[in-house]
Every structure is written in C-alpha cells, then in structure tokens.
Figure 1: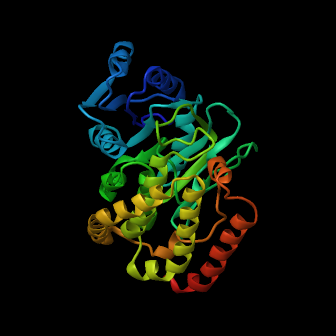
Figure 2: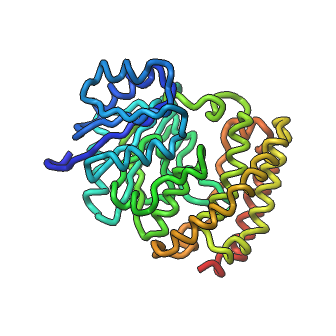
Length: 352
C-alpha cells in the first residue's frame, strides 16, 4: 500500500457468531488499516463482546435492533475518519494483500470511486461467485465469471460490485446518498453502484484480489437447491423499485415489454418453486415503496452526469444453481435471453 494512504475498515454484523472473529482476523492479513469499525445490527449472541475483547482497538457502534445493512453501512461511512473505506460483511475471508490490490485503481484515477475483488465460494474456494457485473435492462445484474474456475484476469471496468467486500472513496459515496434504506436487503449495493456510474464515476473489479464468502444471511442466501421465500419476495420487490430509483420515465416505458417478459419468467420460476405468492407479495410491496422511490429519484437528478444508456444493455442472463433447479434452463432460458436481446436491439438506439 502506498505510504500515507489512510483506509478505514467497516465491518457490518448481525448474529455473526464466531465468524465475526474470523473476519476480523482476516483483516489483519489483508492490509494495514488506520482504524477498524464494527457496526452491529442488534446482535444478541455475544459476538460483539467477544470481538471487542479480542480487538480492544475496535470502534464499536451497536444498534438495539436489526436495522439492516443499509443503515449500518451508512453509519460506518459517516463515522469513518479516512478518505477510503473498505466495507466488509461479517462472513468474508480475505486473502493477504487484498487492500493494496484494491487501492491500485483508485490511486491511479481520481474518477475511480470503488473497486472490488474476485469473491469465491467459501466451500468450493476456487469457484467464482462475483467478479463485478454488467446491468441488464430487465432489472438484474449479469455477474461476470460466475461459476468459473479460470485464472484471474486483468482489472476491468464494471457497472456493479457487491458490498460484501468493497473499497470506496468515502466522500463521493456519501454525496451520492449512500445505500438506500428503502431497498432493505438485496440489490441495495447494485442500486448504489448504478447511481455512481450515472454520476460519471468508474467502478473497477480487481480479479487478482481474492475474498471468500464463507457464510450467508439466514432466509436470504442461496445455500440450497431452492430459493428462500424471503429472497424471492425481495428480488421481485427491489427489481421494480430500482427501476423507479434509477431510470427516467421514458426509459422505463421503452423497456417495459422486455421487463414484462422477464417478470413473467420470474413468476413462473416462483410457481415452479411452489411459491407464486412470493412474487405477488414482492410486487405489492414495491407499490407501497414507489412514491418514496420516485422522490429519491427526483433528488438524484442534480447529481446525474450520464444518460441511462450509459449503463443499460442486454448482457447474457446468469442463472444460479437454485434458478436452474427451478427449471430456468435449456430452451426456456435461451428463449428468454434471445427475446430480451431482440427487444434491446429495437429500443437501444432510442435510449439516450
């Protein structure tokens, strides 16, 4: 790491158990930090007390209840004293030298606001989960390298990164408004990344920097053969809200036929998982948050420097193992992908 560069680490936690101690220990080998902040969301398992006993220099900010990752990450960003902040979830293992690798693109270009590592599976440690991604106009990220075992490639610009392990410039992220509490869980990091891109800023993935997702959130993480109901609800809800938060009415109208087809596929997937109510519940919940989303979108307009076309596209859809288990494979998946690409060819030229 360059001499004189100050970086704060912000660990957000909830009922992390012994995983929290492992994550904090991993920070010690990842790099040298000016400070480590622990922002806890209502844990009652004694993990915070054990973490502080083992690391007396921790700056601890506890909440009395589970306020969610948006609130805790924003609190960590506000309380941090360094210009750069490494955001870490409580279930991440970090490779030695990760911090120096993530700092490289940010120090090389002031317009680069965030960098993320190659995040691999905590069990199959050579299998990629996230390596940045492109944004699909249907309302989902197309994660690069998902499921791959290939050797890490060079750094590259991306549209989205995951906040499980994310190095950011503190001030631009706060200026952008931080994480939207409206979204709660899932896609809150994606939505922030899209805002930063529309502000004309760069996001870079550094595949040679490695981290492992060793845990997961109960009721949300994909750790089995099927989708948890809560995840289906949140995905259906937040896809709709992100479209309101980010894109103009004209863009939403032009994309609507493709989006409608994708949402029908989402309903079919929920039905195949015997959970059609989850998709319906998510859409009803999105209607309740629509007014707030549109208000936040209006506030963000003054910060925008780029058009919707900067981040919109039709990259290949990426299906998880759980989605494939629900039937999202073969001819149906290829038809959906092809139809969405075809509609993008029609409308892409009209989205400025």
